[in-house]
Length: 314
Image (cartoon, rainbow, N blue to C red; front, side, top):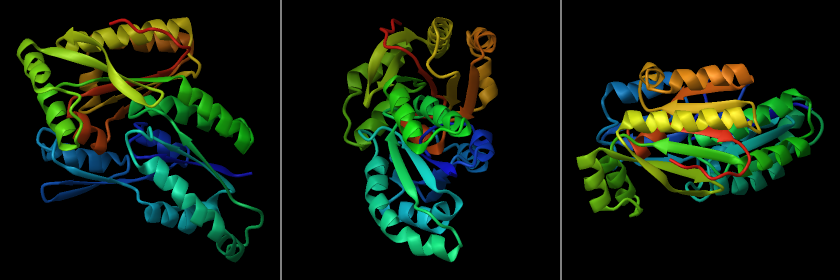
């Protein structure tokens, strides 16, 4: 059985990983002022966004996840002919409508695929499996990496979906924002007042950065540090300890809203990479997608891994 993977564009995984594994990306439309962008993990489009210096003034941008109709078109024109089953992985349903849109689209896809496959000379049914990664940005990557690994190992659709759901429950995504005022402005433009004016002003004045965590569909602060570099060091040291303790998936993901070399020069990065190499853990590094930079600001960093339940202290 030919099993494929489709992901939400807000899942931060490397472009080469997407291409190498034939992953379809359900794009997100972004409008900043009069500029329009298609966020589909294409590094050229990400660079076009950065070149225009839009990351610092896009808190009022409009973003539209793939609609029900968009998902139907992608599957009926391409996926039902290329695969016999597709596992769809989305960011947390509590933060985006894409999961619900894929579920709704699946009814029409499963109703209308037969004539299309027959016309292409393909026999047999077409299956869809939809999984909420219960995370966001780099935090969704462990579930995607494990799904790909299970498919390559020849597992059945039921086994792939069950394992993906297990990993999603054990995935931790961390974010370190660079600009609290930007984060507050973006949150307010979306009706989210979780970042207060006072906290953002104090954070800016004292250079205090929160460490935010996404886990099982919920997001919130789990620590604070003074300075972005100190925050990066704290996150890298935390991840190093988790790798040493043992991950549930042999991959760790990083995304950065800027030049990846800037991230690689942050304190603690080298030690983390060496620890991963010693443990046989693959490090998946990617530029943060346009949607990520619009929502959390350019220069932010996110980190994702899957491990046993634990209490993180920063």
